[in-house]
Length: 357
Image 1 (cartoon, rainbow, N blue to C red):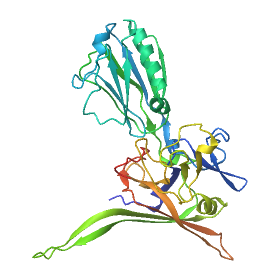
Image 2 (cartoon, rainbow, N blue to C red):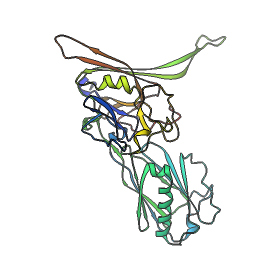
Image 3 (cartoon, rainbow, N blue to C red):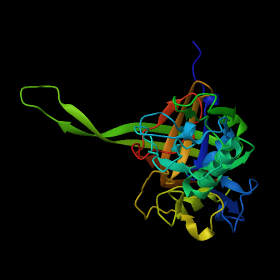
Image 4 (cartoon, helix red, strand yellow):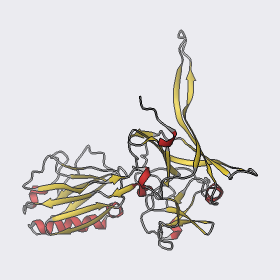
């Protein structure tokens, strides 16, 4: 039997914001990634969530038919394209060729865009161009994908590197109308290959996963019900101290980076500096359809390729330093959270859903 060993353990740390990191610049903690302070991996202290990814999903949609009616969507004819981004959100594309189009039903999409081709020339290149323009004009699609095209081929590249996603062509389309192909799969790295994510100089780890239950006793029954109310997750990390980073985190950014415009959503890439601020746990944790940028994401690897725990939306609850006259100083950082951990064989960089949050 091959036991898990201490040398198998590794820990990674990122923010929950896919596009924003925290950097340590001459002892000062700053948000990196916005318009006034570009991301610089040489200064990173806490990496972006997307930094666990090594490649972004690249999808081509090829328009094959010159007949507008071939693309027309109704509630039930299964003519649509459904894209998933690296954060796990679903983006629905559907078509209206005569003003009577209806959004396909039952797909539970997070975002959708109608492509009005009623005034488009009956040529596949023009249909592609109209689709590209409509998607780029939609703020939700434009925030999630880099959208381009040439000839009859529309290309959508996920703006977040990471987990392989999916794309679904409705069964109402045949290859003679429209094809969908994945040119490159999104991938995530292992902690061993992520120098900006993997924590170093660790001497101790203590992980606790529990639940807050309500005890319900029933008449005539000895066995009670323990009804789960919420999860309680705690991760304590002890490491050799080499800078002021974690004391600054506890002092200024206990819950990572928040968006000031809504207080809930992931902030789009390269936004103005006024749209992000350090979250010192004085705002209600929120989530919406675009995800949540609340807290930090920690990866607890017990053994590479065998068991990796992804701890989502974690905040710092305690920080301490151990001083010793004849030893290197040690610091202990305690993270807490209430979102159920994901247990798998690789790192998981999907955004937390509203249901999980």
